[in-house]
Image 1 (tube, helix red, strand yellow):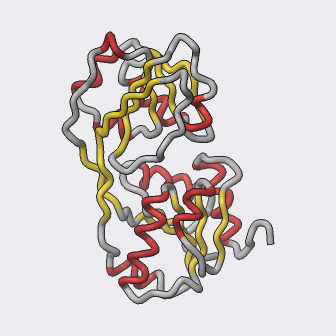
Image 2 (cartoon, one colour):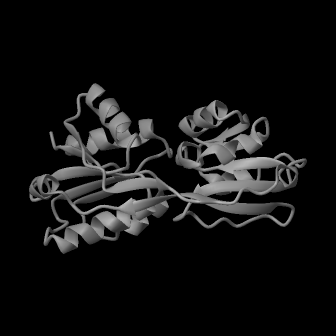
Image 3 (tube, rainbow, N blue to C red):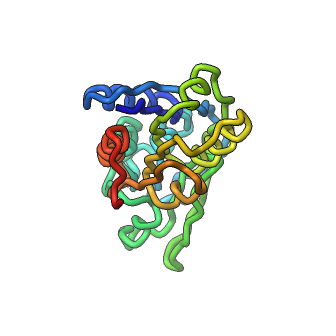
Length: 231
């Protein structure tokens, strides 16, 4: 079985690593990003109908200003983000599973003015005319260099989990900088846009059928066992 490498930032890296090991995978965590909070100016509560959330990092790093929006409706992508929103005192009325863009068509008509709490590197949204979105960058994911121990592993076959387009692009660049080829590396991406950011030339590049950790790990298990979905 091929080793599975998790490169997402903490605390998600450790959680994913533990879930992978529980499935019998030879998983190791090498976060290639560090998340830090950003200074941000919160809009007045009365100008916000609901909060839009694409990552739990927005709740982890939003700081005391989040208290301003306690009790407001929230739209969250993924159960972990929804859980973090509830812990922050928000009223989660919809949990999506296919990204923020998909959720925009399901926003309650009463919620025209949305506050999007996001990372500095974020997905651009096509906003319907009926909605107004104010965006605040509350955190940043900063790329880290490839550790020597990970470089050694990547000289042989391995499977890499990709949770974001930023991670895909950084991993590809880091490999090139270290003089490591792509031909032995298999990638499991959370979504098609993430796979596209990784480029070509890999031993395998596959996308999870659903954008959640359970589907991504099931895909990774197949790749670690030598199967290539769709081949």
